[in-house]
Amino acid sequence: MCPYCRTNAPLVYRGLDAYCSGCGKPRNLLSGTSLTHAGKPARLAGGVVHAFGWIVLVVGLGVAALVGLLLTPLFGATTGAVTGGIFALLTLLAFAVVRRGGRHLESSGDATRDRRREQALLALAANRGGRIQALEAAPVLDVSLDEADQILTRIAKTQPYDVAVELGDEGEIFYVFKQLPAARLAAAGPVGVRVAGAPAPGAAAGSDGPAAEDAAAEVEADRRAHR
Image (cartoon, rainbow, N blue to C red; front, side):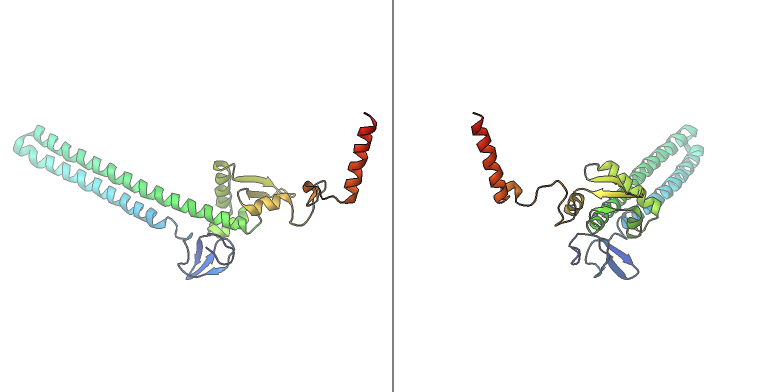
């Protein structure tokens, strides 16, 4: 947890320095999860597995063709074709398994990256009164302005009960994180400022003073007079 903003914001690394993605304050290295490197090891491993799969496919098909050619003169074309076909089929099955593993690793890396991004955006919103814009999120996520807007739009669409989209007075787009206490306070107005038409603190408990008591007595007297 960040000691400054008290959120579980992941760290953003700039060179050898680490910063809180929520408040931007410097943090100790390895004092939290990394946003900069989130999902990269899994995606890199997925790329390596994909490359290995293609090597298996090329080498396996080559071996299948070679076996078929070698067996044809010795045992006939049928035996050579069947044996080579079996090797080719095994190669294709191995290629499919390896490719599936590579896709799983890449998907796992993307999911980890998306989770860390959501954590960072949640912490950033907590430090911005519950509302953020794409131009504030872009440098934190280390993406372009358009990509940051796409990320926030996707979150708003997939989590409509948690994130809402609002338009500012000048047409700017704000993404409101409704599950944050800060967002609810911002929507209700500044703390300590009474909203017009709202009851003053203590009114619900009946502490309106002598004037309220006199008004109640007058209403009771009128009601008795009309009986």
